[in-house]
Length: 80
Image (cartoon, rainbow, N blue to C red; front, top):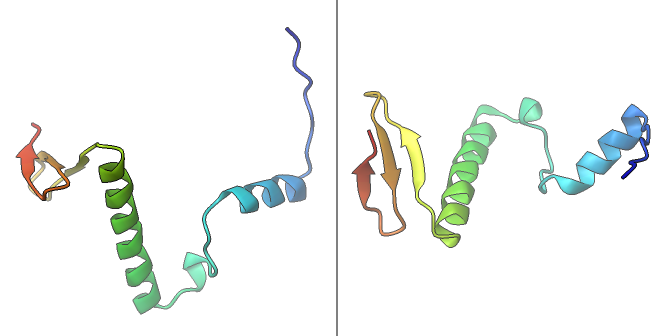
């Protein structure tokens, strides 16, 4: 099986990526502190909603170093 190797310019790649990635209207570097904090919180909530919608838990490391899994019913279990 042979694959054709297409070469794209940086502009073409950037255009392809732009149309495939999210709906941001402002780059994080251009946001004020308040906007950035709000955007980060939205990212966390979107990740949580997505994982719960596909039946997975949200796994993360707490400040004390423990890994935990958070479930849709807000139940939290220590993973290790």
